[in-house]
Image 1 (cartoon, helix red, strand yellow):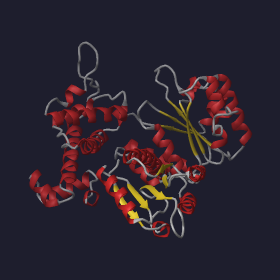
Image 2 (cartoon, helix red, strand yellow):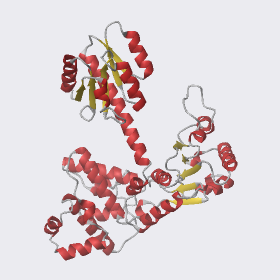
Image 3 (cartoon, helix red, strand yellow):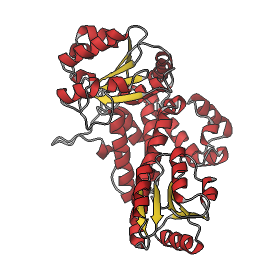
Image 4 (cartoon, one colour):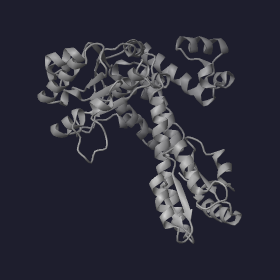
Length: 444
């Protein structure tokens, strides 16, 4: 945290600038100093990757004027004001204007470090949230997260692009852990509402009274937000676990949809997460609401139907997690690849991520196998495998593709290095890469 964010120190007294900078540097912070507000404003723009500590009394533009300017540029930028003894009323006014906190001279250096840490934590959260919002508004980035070259994933991406441009409400169903919420984000991001509000509400996370109030209002006096219906006006409202809505709330939702007319002012994406084999989304919802929501419908395929995508996803997740844990990516043998392809994956992609993380942790300790991770929690501890067989050719091709993909990644697209490691002539490697849809440019 402290090494990734900067602290801008603004003070006209050189000794004070240096002493603050040196102390914070000892605490692990990256600092930069400015002798005046005008100089600092040349650097302190929107999304500044850090916080500001500024003296209040300075010649020319003083600290209060700097604070007002910074708040107009980025109101979430934490600014810590340094004030002289007896200037507490000024500091209180600074807090009213948006300052994060203030330090009164002479201040305890440990107190300054404590405040800097709190401000840096707040800044990191703000910047992370902004980055996430930008990512969720970028359709190309979201589509890139829908990894896989299987026919069902190709069709899914095509459906997202088609339905994203439509105006009608959408019903997304599928097993748990298949990425239905990610698809809802993508539908919003690739369509004409991309720049409008995107509101996500879990219908299973609240009791009926709280959910009704959060969805339709009125909100409590201490709740500084609009009801979801109002908050999402003109944009997209995503209702996760739509099957958890009571009959009464389903009726209110249907009335709201009917009042909007066609095309709807607010698009609703309903996510249904039915798990019972004998029940469907149609069973869980009143028929008139179901048909209004399901005018456009998407069913997300379970992981077990995605073939060699399983190995592609496992490789990506393992690489990412190995980088996070600072260790090597675990090697996958041909037998383990077959076991990954055979597993039924009841928890789908979410379960695959968990297995990849445990595989990385096992590899770091130098123990364990992927087979041991694909065991049920029952007394027999038997492997969880499907009973459906596949031609040997499919297993061989899936493993071959994974092996070439992994090797290309390790060597960052160096054809010569891959040829040497896999003992393949150039022509054979080119043919196999073309067969499996692998392009050298993706690894550079």
